[in-house]
Length: 262
Image (tube, rainbow, N blue to C red; front, side, top):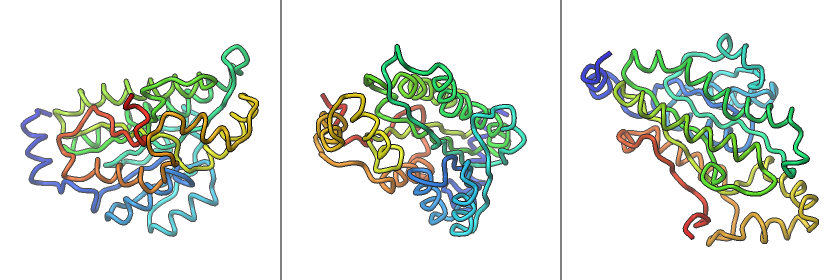
């Protein structure tokens, strides 16, 4: 498909906002994924929530009027058969492990890369032909400040997010001529169950209290001393899926309270 025909299709035959689009959101049962699914549903998208938590993702589908897919993203060979066709893909799913590298469980390292890097690759790979055919698509990868910076004790998470940044940029270059954009949203610490668990894990790793972890570790370098809310990240996703971001691709939308300014 030529860039000319793709541009024409995107500009005239298809609306350039989420309304009426099929939006696949991974990790949709809680946290950023749930907030994103609800936000895209409010924008008029038909949301397909994918998560390992069957009860929570079916509850989400009932709330949004969309669909639920129960799947384990670490089982890569099954993804092609369970991932549905979508116009918008938002890769939110993630897990965390906090440990020094010399003590980091190699199996956990591999698991985290499968869920947060290889699974997004598989999902994007399956989704692109449909997006190319219609001349429109939106890929949004929920990265992190740890896709731009490193922190101690987070070897697998930092590695996965840096890899996701690279993947997102390659998709931007290949997808641009076909009307497909690919961007990352990079929040600092977000008020989610994942961060709640990190407070306890980092308290143990650093030998300090959870309150000290929040203020002396997590928010130490931020100018705005509070956690990011999931709904704030969801608004960034909705922006990247809207007409106002039609020429934004291969970039990062950073929501970090000024963490990376210095």
